[in-house]
Length: 635
Ligand code: MSK
Image 1 (cartoon, helix red, strand yellow):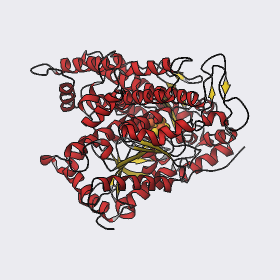
Image 2 (spheres, rainbow, N blue to C red; image 1 turned 60 degrees about the horizontal axis):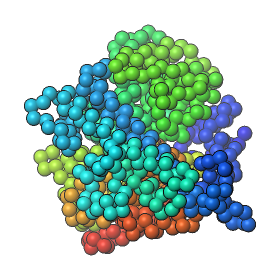
Image 3 (tube, helix red, strand yellow; image 1 turned 60 degrees about the vertical axis):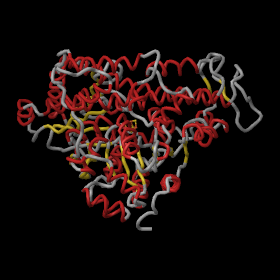
Image 4 (cartoon, protein in one colour; image 1 turned 180 degrees about the vertical axis):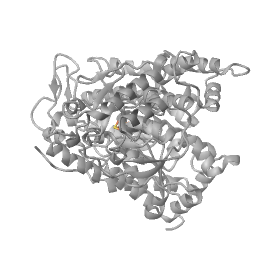
């Protein structure tokens, strides 16, 4: 068995080691078993879109320079890129559709356990969608809004509403002129699949333009709808204290791990875990109570709204089970590794899938249905309680590592946080940037990947950025990783931040790294940028802002879509490893250089986390110079 360790996280290493001793492979071993990975795949030079193939291009030698149909490296890699982006956009956007559909069911009284939790947001978003709200009952407003949101998916003509109501005029103009302003969310994804069929779109630049259109349909469409409806149904987050890392799994409790992305299930599981009868039942079985913990983005959803502890990020899903104290791992959709089914053979943990779109061989299947949401959640909690006594004592190995954090920052909360409840405004943030206390803002998002430092690079980059007075906002597994290293605490400002950023954090009482939520909540970064532009003084459009982003350890196609909607919105995005197009010099040149002339944004691929941080800092400095902002206060 291969045993190389590529993570600095103590809890991860302990449980990785335990898994090795038990002869159970985890993602790190499976990664090493794959080496060397297929060069054609890495370069994006293989095509299996049709049965002339599979074809591959030889980028260096005397081999074929086109596939059997004649597609060259540019066309093949651009087609692959568009398909990846379409899959990523589809994944997030389908998540958004699930939420909009639940809102519809709630408005019709067809659910159990759900309600409208944020009325203010319901009214605000409904007005934005043109719903007349005068004297109408709340459920009617919610129904009209849900229907209008669902129509965004199937729209055939026109434009996505949020693309017209939220971004600065310049971005809208760029998208219109370049014909990349998305119409309907589903329409762009379907068109992406059609264009990449053999013999349709054979112009790599045209394919990449549609890549941006498809990604914009995610960022300003499906993901944004997901965020807004989640806030309406489960309330808009506010700062909340919590804990992260595998130490949150407690030996003396019934532990239920929720994993996936869509909070429709996890919210009900949390609700069910508070049921007195079930808590008493857990106690009767010898446990102190019921402990819910999350993995991946469904963890982030219940963390930012309820302060539920996070057991870990994507790479820690197997290790959570390796503690031997997880009674149930209940999953919905996305980022759930098929490898989990192997663990079902060794541990007492019951794995439960819940969604018809996401079934797993070897898992128990309990179909979730909003009309019986709370009842089904209670049923699952009860299964966990009953399973408590089945623990295999010899396999119990809990760890003590758990780190305090503050999460739950939002676009809306920044108004209050910096401006005060009665003078809610972005003015202090913009002034701090203009006056050189804060250099700019960086978004660190996305996954963890054993190819890089298994999450640790997020910490390195964030530390370097805050040291140089860059305020960091985070989502997804990047946020979970930085939480584990203590960056999501106000104290981190004193330990790591530059003097200017430290002053701001001290004055407001915030961490230098702000947790904004799940992967779909990258839409909050977009809206926060829009709020900065609207406040004025640090740029009139998104591409002028001193802002940059990274999804350094990306693994998912969703991260490609996220990166593209930021690039198409005018921002610089850094990936630690390129998406699979490097076999085409033209495609790489377009993504890393030429696209900047169109949208103002561009890609950078840089495997060194410190260099990546400095690329972002230099980009922010360049934007500051163009805006003629004051020099940094303490340099
Ligand atoms: S969960 S997409 S590993 S961030 Fe959103 Fe984490 Fe990436 Fe899944």
